[in-house]
Length: 273
Ligand code: RP5
Image (cartoon, rainbow, N blue to C red; front, side, top):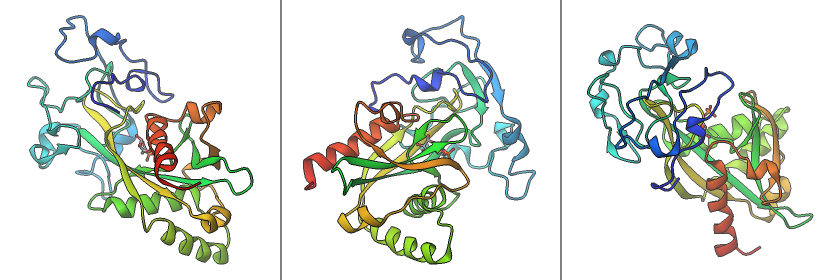
């Protein structure tokens, strides 16, 4: 998302969220005074239940932001240092108001980091440019098979792990071994095409998604052999035509259309079809 773009999906509906306070375009940026602003206060129960100070293996910050360890040390891909709300002491979304305070479904105050692999191929049968897409279970939208970076995990590991979990969950041991070799080869050379804020429908004024997006293009052999199998987190997986006429491509989840477009341009500019 380019820095001058206003977030839109972060002000929209999410199937598991109560309604947000409506934020018109002209009041998104925090510099603009908006005295009527009464954002909905919402943190999902699953976030409360996964408080890492109370539950072993919990993935969420405690509700009380003053109990979050090393909050001052947290940084954003977008802004470096976080901007803190002097009243609530909670971090402020660098892209402005969302109509909701606290964390919704996100575990961390401030940025919640993800990694997204855009895996593309030229369809061997019809020569169309395609990408691997999964259908999300939460809102039914097609998306890049990305996911959250686990604590201390290198992004390169997250990219491969998420791809295998969501799109390459082979049913037999034999297929698993072959898939392992194919993904190793595929993920050997990728290029980072984006790093920053995601216009995600789960974002709030105090918690938001940021990601690193990498593009991996299949060679001819991989393009033919890479068979997709949806994992537990995905309802479906497919090779999606990256065509403007394809509504599943046009309506990709969050900012994923923008990320996929970058990968497509890279194919058209640099790679031989
Ligand atoms: C998006 O949420 C990121 O771009 C990434 O694809 C995804 C990570 O969240 P989960 O899929 O793990 O819910 O903002």
